[in-house]
Structure formats: C-alpha cells, structure tokens
Length: 281
Image 1: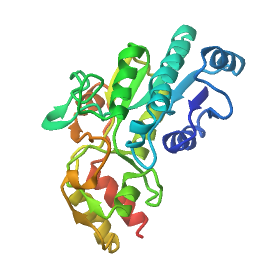
Image 2: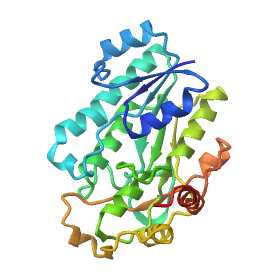
Image 3: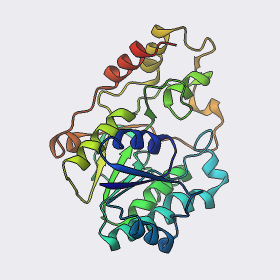
Image 4: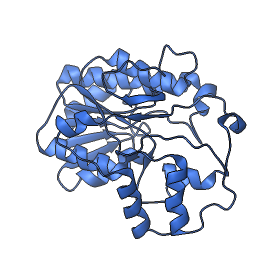
C-alpha cells in the first residue's frame, strides 16, 4: 500500500523505518506541505494515491511540555485544529487513518485507566497542563473516525535519543519518583505493522503502553546496572522542580490491546533489559 506518515519526528521516523519493508512509505513534513490545510492535503492524497494515513505530527514541547504554557496558540493549532482537519479529510476520502495521541489526559493511581474512562486531566480540568488539554480537545473534536492510539513517555533502543524518556532521565539531576506507563516504540511499530498488514481497520481508541510499569527509581536501577548513571541524581518533591505546568502521573489499562487486538507488548522490565544488554553506555 501507499502509506503517508504525517510528521518526520521521533515516532514518525521509527514508523517509517518499520513499514517501508512492506509498503511504499511517504513521510510528509509541514515544511514540505502544510497538511493542516484541508485542500492541500486532499490534493496530495488524491494525486499520490494514498491508501493509509498515520498522523504522528503535533506539538510536544522542547525541552518538555512546559513550552505549551508559553506557546498556547501554536500548541492548539498543531494538536487540535490541524489534526482535526486531517481527520476530516481522511473521513471524507474514506482513507484509513491512525492518529498517535497521548495518555497524559489521566492522572492518579486509583485504577489503571481504561480507554472508556472520562479523562480527569484534560480539557475541563483546572490543574491540567495546556498540552494535556490540547490532546483531550482533539479527541472531543475529531469524533469517532479512525484509530486513536494513546502512548506515554516513549523510549526506544537508542539510549542517546533526545526524545526518549531514558535520555531525559539521564540528563536530569533532580528526579521525582512516580510510577507511569511508558511506550516502547518498537512495540508500537510492531503493532501498527501487524494492524495494517492484517487488513484491520476500526474506529476506536486504544492504549498502547508496556505492562508492569516501573517507577522512576526502578527505571534508573537499569541505568545504574549498565553504567554509573548520573552521579548527580537525587529524588525531590515535585514542587522543587519549579515547573510551569503540572504533570500527569498514572498507569493505563491494556486489556483491550490484548483481548480485542490480540497483541502482547513486552513488560517494561523486559524492554529495558533488552535495551541495556544491547546498548550499555
């Protein structure tokens, strides 16, 4: 098939590398074409005979989601208005569509959050970050077309990648010890490849994270075992970080992923063991 991946960043690059062995993959960046404009995207999809669209674009914030507090219009345009336009074009053209989103619309440990749960850290919550608000707003505005995959705190085999949560943890001297679901990007790629190759297509929301989430202390133990980690690491209260926005801290349920989609991701410990056995620092 002719697959168009919108966004050439962290997730988009991994997906392109995974899918191009089986399909014709085009990675479309906004610098190449402003695909947030409906008429431009529609013309491109028609001319290129695109069979499948995967949207990996959006505002993530650099170095972190605090940037969304300062650039709210940009965040809203890239996380809500643009992706909704893409969704509408794909729906009108009846092109199968996958949207990569975020599970950072929940917080708290009273349960592992289900796809059907009402977000408690989203658009209508005073304490939520603007980034989380924008992710929830997309889901509300887009409706039920396409498969929306919620990921969290992604990491991959390249421990030097600046977008990986592992690299971020290594750089920070002050850490907070919360347990959070995370997404091993090779598992995400493996699922999407299987989903497309099997001819699956559903209008759905799906959590794709690794089970048995570790807290921060558990993750850095893997780093310390592979090398000496960051000698300046220390655990502090969240308030000591002086962030502009609050953070989501939660674990997501993946029962639907396993039962409806017949997909079993690695546990977080299995993924980290694989990474640090292959790539010790």
